[in-house]
Image 1 (cartoon, rainbow, N blue to C red):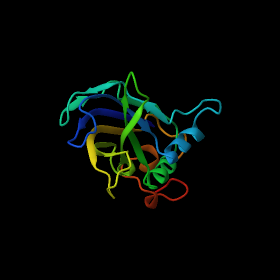
Image 2: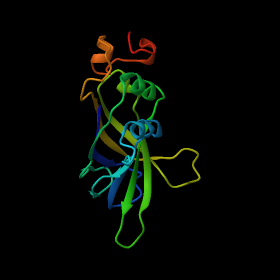
Image 3: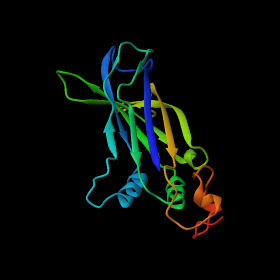
Length: 187
C-alpha cells in the first residue's frame, strides 16, 4: 500500500493570533498506523511517523497561503484485513501549526485532526480541517484560528502475497470493512 498526504493550504482565520507569521505544519501519523508501518518495515529501518512541511508565509488574517513541501508518500506492506482493522479504530492524522521566528523559539499556534476511517470505504479523503488554538485561555472551548486544506490517498501498490483468489484479497481495500472478512481473508 501507499499512503499519500498532501497538505495544500493554510487559511488564517479571524482569531489567528498574529498579524503575519511564517508557519510550518507538523504532521503526526496516528499511533495505530505507525505501529502497523513499524511491524511491516525492515527491522533496522526507523518509521517516520512525524514530518514538517516547508514554510508558508501567512500575510494577514483571512488569507489563504499555499503550503510548501506539504506532500509525503509512505509505502508499506499490510494485508487488507490488518489495514482495515487499524482504520476501523478511527485513527486521526494530527496537524500542528507552528510559528517560526528568527528571534523567538518555535511556538505552537494550533492543532487540527483528520479522521482516517473514511479510507475504509474510499481511496481518498479531501478535507478542510479546523485549526483550534493551542494556548490555554479562560474560554471553555478553544477558538478556530484557521483551516488546513488537505488530501489523503490510500492506494494498493501490489497484489498481496496470499494465495487467496477472492476479490477482497485481490483488489484494493476500498469498501472493505472488518465485518465483511473472516480470518482467512475470504468474504
